[in-house]
Image (cartoon, rainbow, N blue to C red; front, side, top):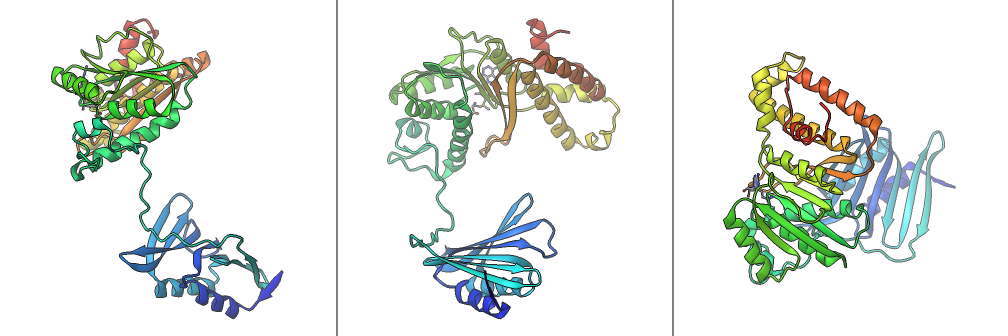
Amino acid sequence: MKFIDKSDVLQLLKKYIGSTELVKATLGSYKGEEADLKNIYLKPVRIKNTYQLSFTYRYARRDTVKNYDLLLAEEMVISFCEAEDFHSVSLFLQQENIFFQLHPKKGWSYRQEPVANCCVPNLEHNKQKERKITDTKSPYLHELRLTDADGKVYKNAQDKWKQINHYIEILSSTLAELPQKDGLRIVDMGAGKGYLTFALHDYLSQQSNKMVETVGVEFRKDLVDLCNAIASKAALSGLRFVEGTIEAYQPAVPMDVLIALHACDTATDDAIFKGIQHQADLIVVAPCCHKQVRRELEHHKAKNELNFMTRHGIFMERHAEMLTDSIRALLLEYYGYQTKVVEFVSDAHTPKNVLIIGLRKKINPERQKEIQTKLNSMKMYFGLESHYLERLLKEAALLDD
Ligand SMILES: C[S@@+](CC[C@H](N)C(=O)[O-])C[C@H]1O[C@@H](n2cnc3c(N)ncnc32)[C@H](O)[C@@H]1O
């Protein structure tokens, strides 16, 4: 191990930090006073045609990114090292890598290694996000007024476009966990204008060599007619929309995936119920308003330690939302669904942004007992007589009283 003077370390940092040689750098082994700071990662970026250094401050639970011009960046790194806030510094240069390490009592060590393949830094600041839907020229996107005739996403459709892609991204990894079958049958309840229904169907049809069959259930006839016309114009086989309510829908064949996005209030429960009843392998819902539980909470006004919070209308709203959806997740778990709740990018028209995803696994009778006990004590505590989904399951004799 070679040791060098601190002044030489600073000299080399001065030479390289602001130079075009720098590919990236890492400051590590933080000993300074800033709570939870672990590392700083540096990389050159070009912002509005000026060359800057981007600093990613990595804390225990979050990252913060700041960009500085070269002179300031250089000064900052030098002052960090002068103060010995970081005890390790790695410089990744185009032709070589240099590693400095501060050892107690011994001072700074220096190690240098050549780079096998010369690496030129990527200066793009906002790397284009890779989207799941790569073919923006698919006719259905144009028919849905998301893209123009050349496949360019309209400015006013950017939020929807982001939402669709995020949705497909979330679902594609979960769908990969489904049991292998010859085909995939999807029912999308409360399909609306079908943006997400079309996108998922098209994506899956292109990704897998399986037969994908998708049914969109919607009670508005105008939307059903519109979506069927677009599906046929875009020659999307296996996709159709039917007029009717979620409550009354009876699938002709078993469904593999049940989806209900932003179906109002208890329509989400109706959809989950259908999924459980028909043993869908995957249930995905994005709940909308939570009126049923909210009404009951207001009506019974149970006294508990959370009163200080729920006396504020807006917190009561959020509380009802969390309670409703936690019970949904718990009930899914009761039927052996491995359940997760994730954030879903909303678009301007749908501020609700929670997605409950249940993947059917094995029923665990011990866990079922625990869940029933939990449900009963929770309802008592919150003053909730019943949850609509629980009621549906009891009426169908799928859940004991
Ligand atoms: C807010 S939109 C959401 C559309 C789409 N799922 C989305 O997320 O973009 C809700 C749709 O569900 C339909 N809907 C609500 N309750 C329903 C029910 N019980 N049966 C059938 N459709 C329902 C409404 O007509 C509406 O088109």
